[in-house]
Image (cartoon, rainbow over all chains, first blue to last red; front, side):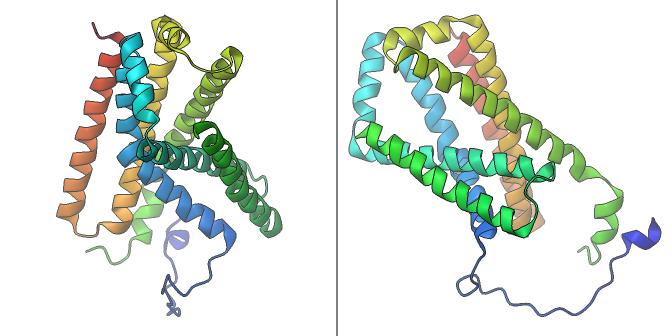
Length: 132
Length: 119
């Protein structure tokens, strides 16, 4: 074990200008997974709890909550959160597949990341159509 | 500062539990998402009576509670990973993690209040 644990340190070229690196699709899915997760924590959880709290109280509160959610700004918030949830869920399912060694080869991994990106955007569009 | 982290990272196995819990909580949340989606489709939308009826059902309350607790654990592991990657000064990272823990515990209290509160 002791031999395995020690990593051989080689001087490697470091180029980390994130604005100039052309990211492969799986990397884009990965960073969006992180960004959507952060968004869901910072905005999603409090909005979810607040929404359920006020909407279950009474029929009047439910109607009031619906009218608040009908405002354009809140619709945008809901839409952003819907995208974050859908993307995070689909990218997570992709992760679970990779965990059990499904689609780990380069071509399928690229294809599945493209599917995650496109499908989450399509489903978000469906949510947008239902919202407006 | 740790100059050779590879030593500890391999021997301690502390990542395994987080790795597994992140996946177990993810599956719990995915199943709950399917459940709620199915209920909404089944009723052809959400009006107040359906919504209220759902939250009057004890099984749904427990499922929601399970989802929320899974969500809070999942958020903790995820946000802590983000903090470990981007917040380098140890003191700041500790502060961020303390704030996140306090928020999640408060959210758990809010969840219980919503599900079983008198209001």
